[in-house]
Length: 81
Ligand code: SF4
Ligand code: SF4
Image 1: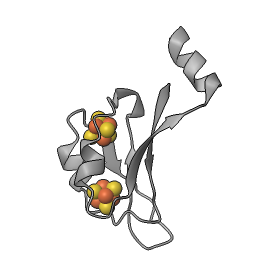
Image 2 (image 1 turned 135 degrees about the vertical axis):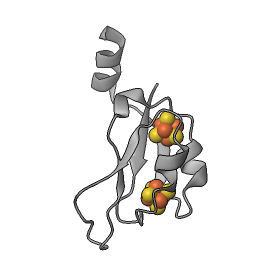
Image 3 (image 1 turned 180 degrees about the horizontal axis):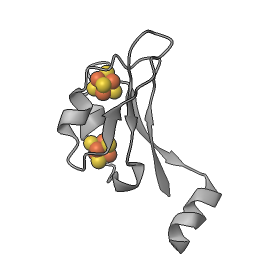
Image 4 (image 1 turned 45 degrees about the vertical axis):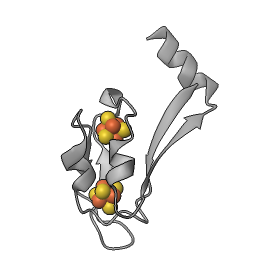
């Protein structure tokens, strides 16, 4: 099962805490402002994510979730990589 890492930009306040704690340096602050008026975090290097969930645990606003994805196409792509 493929895992999916999601940052809800409508919740994220751009505090940068997740960026600091990510052991793989996956996350960065976007250069575009969200509808809430913040610069949200995003996965700049998603291929490096190891789904350790440290960012999810640390986010004070619980903006980050890791879910199981049933996206078979993406899963197949990963298997062939
Ligand atoms: S799940 Fe882990 S590796 Fe992936 S972005 Fe969050 S802290 Fe970084
Ligand atoms: S810790 Fe949460 S609120 Fe702060 S930048 Fe990361 S996702 Fe956004």
